Length: 268
Image (cartoon, rainbow, N blue to C red; front, side):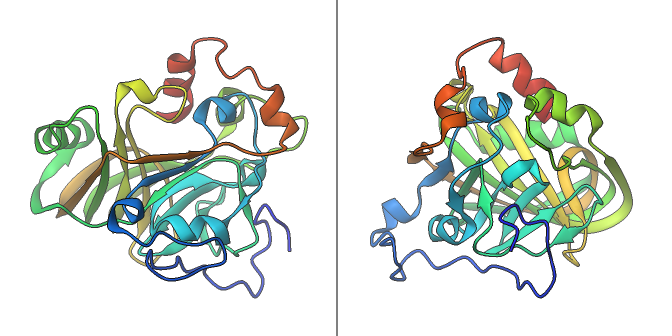
């Protein structure tokens, strides 16, 4: 099996484990630990072209049933929804994920909605983010966002698989394909993170989309919501795992350059 997730033949969807089940690595046995924001590596490493990691999706599943990220060799966008991992590739389609594939960067948590409400449209991206800012007042906390609904317009992009020597993330996304959908139902999910996480993660809003049929999606760049249901979760617990014995990570200049500007270019 290709550890980057390139092959899909006879692969079943990987199912995330429940937080309180036992596992080989010892899962959390208390609610606070189970509700942490778990992250593998840093966005600054991804910016520098550290596109291979050693954490498998089987291991990542121990830490959440909700989240986003990418795959080794930057082989598409990852979305984790209802415990199922999907690879959103450069063909615009959602593909199955196997437990032995690996990720260079991912953020997940066990989603437990603290606030829910119906949202009426039309609502574009700036208006939606303004609504979220009103509903999520703790600017220095971590918010998980899930919006299930009907979208009159959805625009996404997906990164292409890279080959060594790897480029920077900013260079890699210059040729990313863009897909636009009209009148589509699905789920927009991700996180709003505080400004102080720059270099560690993506400050502000970072959202991925997948349709109801789990057939297509990607990294959201723009949308108009016709109507849907919003759920928010909040945590202040961060668990950051740094790659071990990874020469690419060890050699990367993680604090060099305009990190905030590079994140904005690569992620918006």
